[in-house]
Image (cartoon, rainbow, N blue to C red; front, top):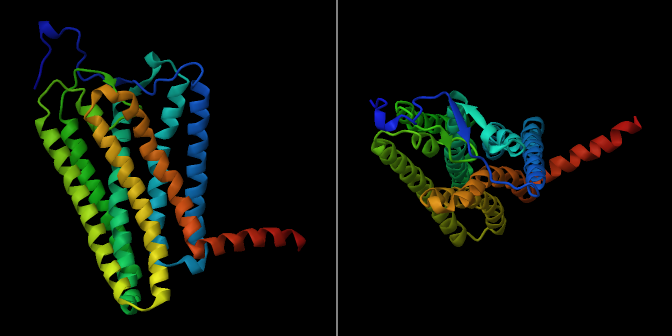
Length: 321
């Protein structure tokens, strides 16, 4: 444990009040950035909540694929709701007044890492669902039963929770001698950088966590898509191949958006000279997948398009009675 010494009189130890650097905005860019983030956040809320409500209320969408996609929409809403409003509010506040309580900061850090980790685990079980549907269609309903969907969902969220809890647990044990978070919101690297103690264990676990998650995620996607491609190449069923192309291209597109957004953020954390770009990418890591996921799934899924058209048609006819 570290204790204040005469050579470190200017350090504040274990302060419960931290300062967020936030985004660097000028007087001319402040309101356009504020408006952009606000509109993006409102769109994320409306689009993802609408998708969840539509899937829950429309019987023809009561399929494992859509229930699993609900997890992604819920994850997007939760991740953005606990981060983006704070970032939006801080834009209108002078940098010196962007203060946050340590425990709120921990909650933000837990949320952002749960958001990223859960996106990987959910997309992995969605890949498994597509694999069973295309490579073993006759046993699909047996394998992907309601009980199996619930088990996979709990596993996806449970694994993410445990991994992130350990990650933050290693950071909580550290004493803090700094108070400035060099990020628009709190995350684990920003938190353990507040410490003057040895953070080797944090770096080792953080790196291992990232490598294992990405290796498992990328490996499972490559394996399932290799088997799906092999089945499509050997099958003469055009309707099967067409269905596989549509559903798999949608899933793969969602995965690549999430993967690229995360990789850019991880890479920029290693280059302090690009801190401004890192801050922007940290915001986009939440906003881009959350905005594009419902659009891509809504456009590609014929069942969702039909359900949406039925809802709007019903609303047009309803006033006539």
